[in-house]
Length: 379
Image (tube, one colour):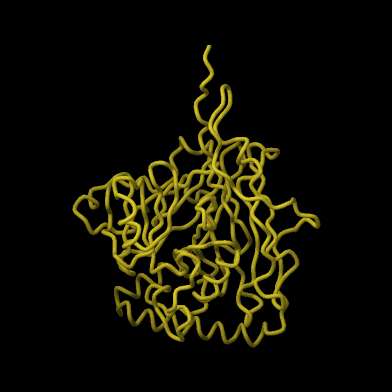
């Protein structure tokens, strides 16, 4: 099931319709628990590994800054954001680290490799009991990158009257291909929590008060917060889109207290939050200037939450889980000049048409270079 991309979802969804969601959950938890026991026996002495080369001398760290006002003949934001580089954080656990853990490595722009990086990546090993538990994190400079949300062709399944007839492109519009940088998975299926979503002015699933909500405001600012606070601080009409996840793992710098509980299901849909599985998450720094996207292997909910917090996220929302769904893809010109996806790290499932030519069944996010502000120069 881990080798054939469509096999896991097909088996799980098919079984739910035959034996019920609770029985499928019990099977999944049993299978993941057995897999973890085998891993802990055979890999207990395995050192953490790295996936890319980390420069010996990192560039001095800076932080992202708001774009400065436009000057005649120039695009707003280009100069101020060019210095973006997250601060190196070092290993999550000194005893369980690979060379370069917690060091930010620039991701070159496929169109202009000489341009100042908009994206950086790092690797952490956030679980002190599992050296093979990996967390790949991308830091996104929101001063020069736009974040978009796209509904899948089937998920999240609409529960509102306005959402049911909504036409879903379910792939990245061709108009955005020229500016496309990357894409990553969205949240849970509707049946796994009824977490809300609104896009293109249409509410597909109504918000839940306890839902951790990732939202993009019409002025371009990003927010992650519990719906009860977000909806109080920001008018819904001022939100360009929003997507909900289970309760915020980290909120205003504080870890959710339930993540310290021995048994909790909030962050695994129906699965136990301590189930060791592949997970994904998003976070924002305290100033809302850097978006962190995390994709993990063999992690519990507490491990990915603490790893994202260690990387610099002040608020963290978990996205989808399980083997097939979490992924972060970069895009570069392929054969004939057509865009081709490239995984951030090996071992993640995707197709050559993922998100760009093939309609996605599930919702997803994608990143584009910001459109330069119009010149104010007079003829």
